[in-house]
Length: 266
Length: 260
Picture: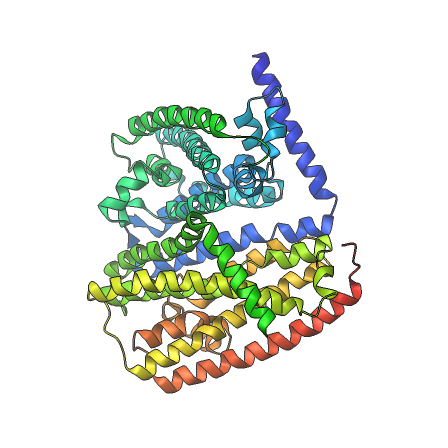
């Protein structure tokens, strides 16, 4: 219990520190919040146009598609705010500049400090906006949901977030092996964009990837399927199984990576 | 001119030093654009009034992936040079900073575009998915390539130059890159948009960065319309070049060698 309190307090301090350093330049802060909404707006524009042309995509109507879009964006922006910026910083410059040396000297789990030390506070307004749109969409469609479907959605959504953390922080360990590995996280980022479409529209071979190696189906499609009662019986067991497998791979990759790391940047 | 060639070759060598990084950076965007093929194939198969055939959709996005490197760049180094005061090293030498930057970026763009052309074009031909249009169409589409690059670089470096006044500008640059991607037709063919939008879009520079050359390569646009589009893009390039020069001069007045 003490450990949990200590790490929660540490994460909160990272958050407060990031907010303070961002607010130092307020005009910059205002400019920096532009990118997220522009990108989400563009992705929504594409999705909306796609549904307007097709009527239905992969067995999903436009209202269902919008719910899937918002559910994925909610999960993804939480990921960005909490840990994805840390992952990106580590791969772009943290590892090469030797920031890891400093982190290794601290009496805190290295993986924790790497992933949670750079919360993306500037995306909080975007997170708030997406939450409002998501709640509104759920409200509009409330007649379709049951208590069971909402609970299953909550479980699947949480598992999806954990899977996103595990897959991104496992990919991050490639940084220990490559001199310049910044594009690894960008590749993950770009692939994740396709989690906002019903996975059923992709060919079977790509669907297999989406449920295993790059588990983007669990970032939006699976949780929303639970909410809409469109789930298949193996969704939840496979989500749990994948999480367990990824956890072990993640721990192994980190141990191996740190063994490989030669300090003073690589 | 020779010094800019040297910058080009030095950047070329730098790009080729980190090959895994180059491969991932080239194909992350190509992959993103190619994945859009599946989205639009699903859309068009469900749409009874579809205007795009299956092969047309595939070739559209393969060409879009190929051309994307020409308009997708991130001149963050300009922002760093201004912010950290590194710009001084160019100002005290007989070299134009903007000339240096454009030579530096050209190498990366050339390598990335060639890599995609070498891999994707034979794939299109081998799969029999693309029937080459007339030589005039291909030549005209090729003429678009340097203009697409120059316009995109001018546009994005113009945004970066605002670092003279705002310390961090990357978010605005990213926001405009996303908008550019949307309006250029990289992820959605412009012909899927409402007609009123298409009419306005023709006179803006963005659709000529992707949609127009792709339709030329597909043989779906006439050469006179292509030439008109090329003229529009050239005019926008001149306008943005003049604007950038003006803002650059204003920014330099604001600059101190110690950084901002």
